[in-house]
Length: 123
Image (tube, helix red, strand yellow):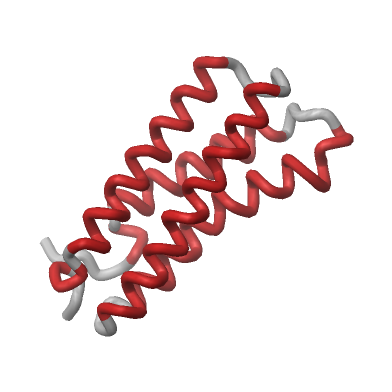
C-alpha cells in the first residue's frame, strides 16, 4: 500500500498521540507554568506533527524533505528536554516521563531512518 498523506505515516500517528498525551498532562500543571513550560512543551510536540506534514509535501525534493525532517528531529529532542523539566519539577510521574521520552526516542529513530533514505519517499 502506498502512503498518500502524512496522516498515514506511522511516525505521524505516534507523534500526534504523544502530543495529545502531553496536552492532557499539561492541563494539570500549575498556572504559573502557563507561559513557560506548558506553552513550550505543547508547541514543540505539535511542531513535530506540523513539520512532518510539511516534509511529506516536499518529498519530491530530497534536500527540502530531509531539511524538514531535521526540523522534526529538533522539535522531538526539544520535547524530550521539556519532559525532563516536567519530571524534575514533579509535574509528571516517572512512568509518564519514561513512556513519553521513549516514544520520542522511537519518533527520532523513525525520522533518522526516513532522512537516511529520502529516495524511498519520493514519487
